[in-house]
Image 1: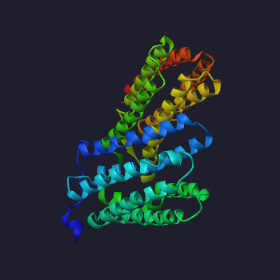
Image 2: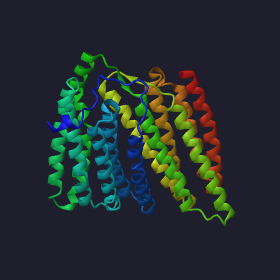
Image 3: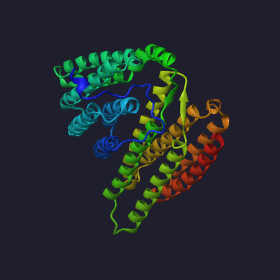
Image 4: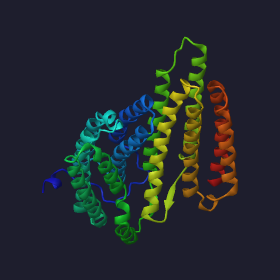
Length: 380
């Protein structure tokens, strides 16, 4: 068979302890700089309800494909010609699909559906291949390939229907793609029971989420240059405060997430935590969008929206920490009280001129950063 000549993926039971991310995986991640950049540009140009909704769907599609490919390489990656081919083809498909992000943000999905068809087909091929080579992981992989096969059929139908319905096709298939774990959970439980594998998000995969968040944080810094006139002192100060704010968000994230070793109790729990990482990346992206708008506007609603998005991004870090380090403290009144006070103080800063608001938020984030550092040390 042709697949055998191209090499075999690593079996899920062939665990590589302390696995390092390959250069090819890093290059694949770098492709998503384009995705995040184009989504950010589109949202800054038109920060409206429908553009936000469209951005969520588009972000979901691109990061579903990244999520699946990254999970595949974490469990089955090696230097076989087959695996190298898979990731290179995914890079090409992703780069081509990114061309159609602006029209997708405007609500026109026809070309984006066509661009997502080969990505869906590639992931069907990926999981079919695993069902052929990996006996232990085969039953679950067949379910993945079957559900994605149905999704592919719906996408094909989506290319033929009127454009006003194509948003719902993209949204429905996206939910189906992410929801496959609910269909496959019994097969996964049997598999993990037979093999004795733990339910974990491996450290190497956590590192991949961290790298993707770093790309989103880098886009925030890049976007600051687009709205800064260095000849004006006020704008220069805002630019510096924006850099400090980005660095403080990063400091909180990498102190909290960087120390995690995630063990859970079921495949659905494991996948849900992975979804939280993706949601966190989206909110960091929104932080960058709204920071640009705050730098160019004194509109109270914009500042309040920025503060709420920033608060949610910090809250998500805490939720991930609590779910994976100390489940018994998830409902801790102290933790909830801390975030309630934090939100109130953040909202008060929206009444300040934007330059003073940013200075106050930087100070508050410095305190939050210290608080997280203390909590992580105690948890560890």
